[in-house]
Length: 481
Image 1 (spheres, rainbow, N blue to C red):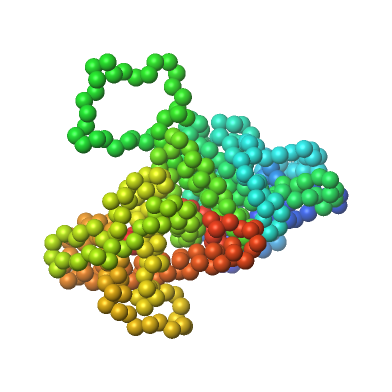
Image 2 (image 1 turned 60 degrees about the horizontal axis):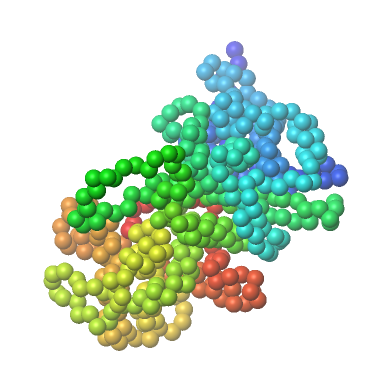
C-alpha cells in the first residue's frame, strides 16, 4: 500500500496563487493592462490562507478593464488525489457557492474573450459623471450612482470581492457577518451611493476613440441623523403630527459614512486616492441633508490619507486657521484646567460647519496646533538639523499642547485608566502622548511635502491633494488614542 502523501508539499499560498489582472481588447486580442495579487484571502480560503491539493497552482481572475466583467480560470501542474478526508480544495465551488463572484465569472474563457472583443465603442461607466481631473497618466473621471440603479448594482456585484481581498475585515454590502448564507439583503439599496474612479485614455488602436480603465471605488451609506436635543427639551405642540403623504427619505437629515474605499494596486502612489476621497467628502460637505461625515473603521494607511485631506480642508476655513494656543493661560497645579485654545469657545461651531466627526476633528486640530509650536519643542521625524534651545515661553506652549492631547486621551480611555493608580495612569498617558507626537510629526511631514509639490507642479495639483495613498478604509482600530 502506497504511503500517504506529505500534505505540506501540496499546500499553496492563496495570496500568491490568486493572480488578478485587468485586460482590454485590441486588434491582436486581449491585452493585459495590469497584474497584481491580493493582500488578504483569509475571508475566502481560511485563516491560514492556504489551498490544499495542487502543485504550481495559479488562479487567474481576469477583469475586463472597463465594465469589470470577471472571468475565473485555474491552472496547475499536478492535482492531489483524494486520500481519506484529505481532498483538494474546490476553489471554484468556494468562489461560486460563497457568492464571492457573480455567475458570469464561471463561463468559458472563449465566451469572455469574444464578448470583450464585441463590446461597443460607446460604453461608459454606470451612474452619472460627477467629476474629472487630469492625472499624470491621463484624464480621470469619477462616476456617481445609487445602488438602486441596476447597472450600478451589477458593477458592484463584480467588484465586491475586492473588498475582502484588500480591506482587512471588509464585508460585502448586504451581507450579514453573523449568517453563513451567501444571500445578500439589498433592501436598503436606496441608502447606498457608489463612486467609481476611472482613467480615460485614447485607444491604442484608434486615436479617435477613448478607453476606460477601472481604478478604484468608494461606497457611502446614509444613517438617519438624530439632532441633539435642546437643554431642557421643549414640549411638543398639541398639534404636532408626522407629515402626510409619501416621505422622500433622501430629504431627511443624515449622518453619512464612508464604508469601503479601494484603489487598485497598479494605480496607487499617484494621488488618485486623495482625489477620490476629497471628491466624496466635498460632495457631502455641500449636501444639505448631511450633518456629519464619518469613516467606518479606517486602517492606518487610510487614516493618513484622511488626516492630510481633512487638515488641508480645515485650513481653508478662516475660523479654523485662526485657532491658537492661548499662551496667556496659567496652568493651575490642581483643579480643572481653563480653556487652553484661543477661540476655543467656537470649536463646536467650526466642527459642525466642517461636518467632521468629533474625534477626527480633535485629532486634526491637535496636528494644526502642533505645527505652530516653536522648532525648539516641536516633535519631528527628522534626526538632522539644528534645534535651538527652548525658552520658557517655548516650554509653556509645549505644555499647553500636551495638556490638550492628554485631555482627549484621558476622555477616550477613561474607563481603563480609572482602574489603575495615579502614578501608572500618568506613565500610560505620557507613553501614549509620545506615540501621538511621532504620528502627527509623520503626517505633518507628508502634508508639507504635498504642499511643496503643489507649488512646484505649475498648478497641476491643488493644495487639497496630499501625496498619500490608501488602498482600504476598514480595519479594527488599535486603541491608542
